Image 1 (cartoon, rainbow, N blue to C red):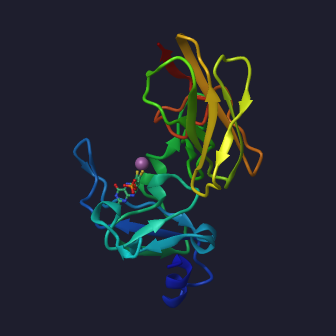
Image 2 (image 1 turned 180 degrees about the vertical axis):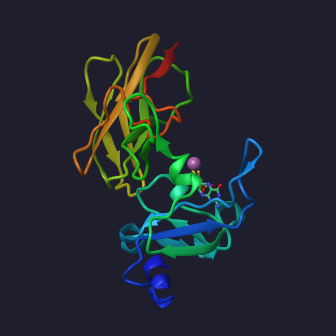
Length: 230
Ligand SMILES: Nc1nc2c(c(=O)[nH]1)N[C@H]1C(S)=C(S)[C@@H](COP(=O)(O)O)O[C@H]1N2
Ligand SMILES: [Mo]
């Protein structure tokens, strides 16, 4: 069900600026300090645009680990936005603050403001469907992987097995949450570093490096995946 439907039935005021879903799980305690229940505000524009309240999955009640009885689903945004075990929705005419948008889930580091930068939308990411430090046999192989983006669909994926040249991967199906892809590879024995980079509908691509942030969020750079071919 759309969150907007529930908010309208509840008599949402035009003055609302933020909506804060609050979880029913035990309060979060960090370093002996009780920070209260897990909660993080959403701007009203996002809350009304595409946010869902999920109470079923594949026609069955939502399983406990997915957030029974109800979880928030915030498309394109980082995981913490999608509050599980929803107990309460707080609506405010003033911006809402919680440790989950002031202390955590912000980018801190030398290239960021001292009070950090809020993290909301996901970046573009790609991963090979291989163990980390994979071992493959020489000869005919098919490399498979997935790419996804907080801006929408993936438009193009390129793979490099030598760090210099890039070949287009073939899309498998039409991904919504992520795009699966594959590419033939005929390696000789040796050690390799595989790279995959995607471009999304907004034209956003994956850079070689990203600025460091202390909490390690939104890593969207090209991953160097070590592979040994025997
Ligand atoms: N109530 C509540 N909701 C929560 C959390 C939590 O600890 N409590 N963790 C969040 C984080 S950080 C993530 S990444 C996702 C994980 O959702 P999943 O278990 O469906 O993968 O749930 C989010 N929702
Ligand atoms: Mo998370």
